[in-house]
Amino acid sequence: MGQAGEPRRVQAHDGELGAAVARAQEGDEAAFAVAYRLVQPGLLGYLRGLVGEDAEDVASDAWLEIARDLGRFRGDGAGFRGWTATIARHRALDHLRRQRVRPQGTALDQDLLDLPGPHSTHDQVLESLSTEHALRLIRSLPRDQAEAVLLRVVVGLDGNAAARVLGKRPGAVRTAAHRGLKRLAKELGATGVAEDGRRTLGESK
Image 1 (cartoon, rainbow, N blue to C red):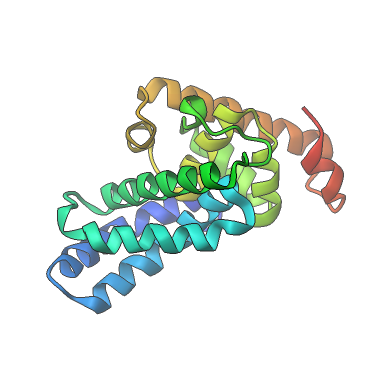
Image 2 (spheres, rainbow, N blue to C red; image 1 turned 180 degrees about the vertical axis):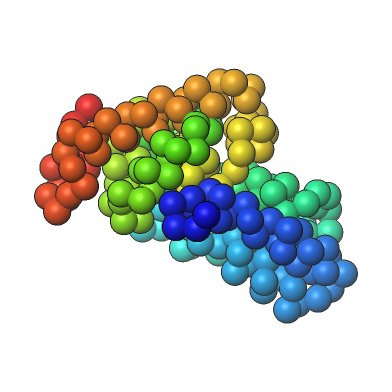
């Protein structure tokens, strides 16, 4: 059920990802490249939501750590996705502390990461938005909702995995993501998916 479901499309590759990670742990470099290819797009989107234009640099730091600690990872493809998101988040927080800046529209702190909502809502949101438009719009959400939506929709984690990344209860994560997605859907309904990017992305609260 392809086009609408980015999270589902991501999860559909988790079997392939798990197999690639297992081979990479045995020293297969080509398998590590496969794992990278499957995870990097979502990870980069997530980091863009946190650190903006510095996402590529932060992702590089995260992948160095991922490669270094790969032997310690235990789990399947979905688990690997969550593990890499946790590492990327730590690198993003370190980066923000060093830069003494906060991400546009989100304040990264304990409350930041909460997760998933109903598939139909986030599928509609994704169908309606280009990636850049989506990231800018997500950054306009309240901070707890913004990162919840990023993990759920962009990284493709389920509620339990997102909760583990954030150190929160799954229910709290689901609630934040659900509220964020509802708000995005409402904004899309109010503004249309727009050509008028600037106004739609910025202000409407």
